[in-house]
Length: 152
Ligand SMILES: [Cu+2]
Image (tube, rainbow, N blue to C red; front, side):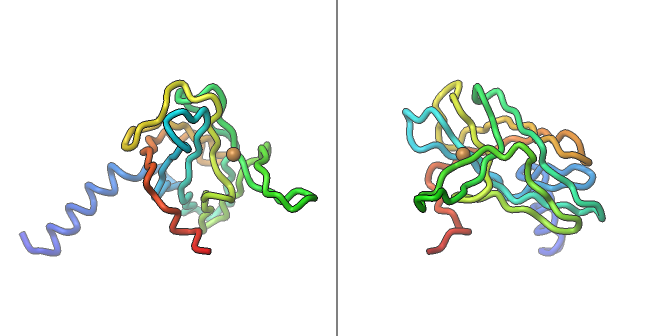
C-alpha cells in the first residue's frame, strides 16, 4: 500500500464518521457547546454545504437533548446590544455554496437541556431541509474550542 493510498483510506474513514453526507447536503465541522456544567442552554455550529444546483433552506431542527431547539441569529437592537432572535424562516443555503453557523451569528439553539453537556459527548440532532429533507447527525460537544471564524 502506497503512502497516498493509506492517506486517502484514512481520510475516507474520517469523513464517514465526522460528517453527515446526504445526497446533496453535507455538514462539516459541527460542534456544540454550553457555557458550563450548570448551563440550561447550549448551541451548535457547523458549515452546511449545498452541492446541488438548487437553493435549499434549513427550515427546522429537533433533538432529544433539549426541551426546545430553534434556529437563532444575533441582531443588533436599537440600544446597540446584540440579541438572539428566533428565525422562523430558517437559513438559506445557496446552490453550489454553503452557509456557516458560527458564534455570534446564525446558530442552532438548545433550550432546557435534558442533561448537562460533557466535553466530548455526542448530541443527536435532526436537521430538516426544504429540498434535501431530513438529515440526522451527531454533534460533538467541544467546550474548549475557540471559534476560528471569530478573530477580532
Ligand atoms: Cu440562540
